[in-house]
Amino acid sequence: MKKTVLTLSLMATTLLAGDVNPSLTSFSAGTRVNVNDVNGNFNSLKQGILDLQETVKSLQTTVESQNTKISTLESENSSKDLEIANLKTELENSKSRVFYTTGHKYEDKDVGYIDERTLPFVKKEDNSKIKVTYTDTIRVHTNDGACGYQLHILDKWGQMVKDKKEFFLYTYVTDGTKQNHHRVSTLIGAFENLEAGEYQAKVYVTNEFTDLDGDYRSGADCFTGYGTHFLLQAEEIQKGEIN
Image 1: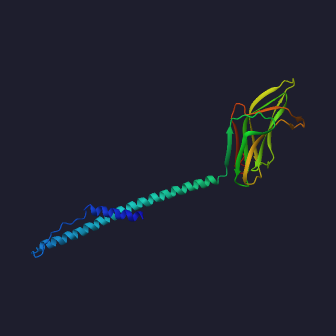
Image 2: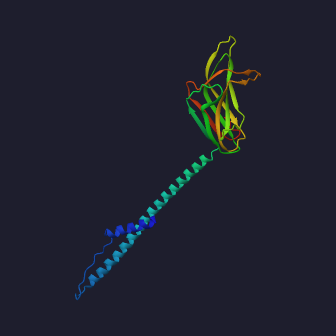
């Protein structure tokens, strides 16, 4: 359709502009005709036809050139559209997908899930791992105890589906004085054998637990998020790609 419109437009413009306009001698009825004038009209018409043919050829060349440019531009646009589509597909099929949340809200809680430290994420493949990274400022205020921080993976209904990953911040002194340590800490855990689907990563704190020596600990004053931003991140990776 574009090529047809362009051809008609160029031909109409050229003819209306008078590029082909042969000069002819007029004759009146009953007037003797000079053979040279007749031959002149014939030759003028012949030349006009030849000029018209050349004009048509020139127009055809111009149209073909313009159509070639149009085809080239359409091809380039199609190529770019295909490239964009391929990039989108590549991103959608990427083996590494990252979800994260951050903020600076603190929580003065000794036992339970930490507010704001909740991260919804979607696991795309069955045969992959979820690597969870948690960085925050944590505190334990005690003379002989600890606060334990755990990473939990919950399903979309809020039920824990995998074993917890945890670390503990201990404070122990022999003279009975309480210590009040604030430390920036990072906990990283990899969770396997999760089916594809919707999940949540959550941070849980507790001051009641049995330590590695079998001693029961309780009563520490825990405080999370003092004077800093936290980061909670979940990344879907292939097995063997922990880094």
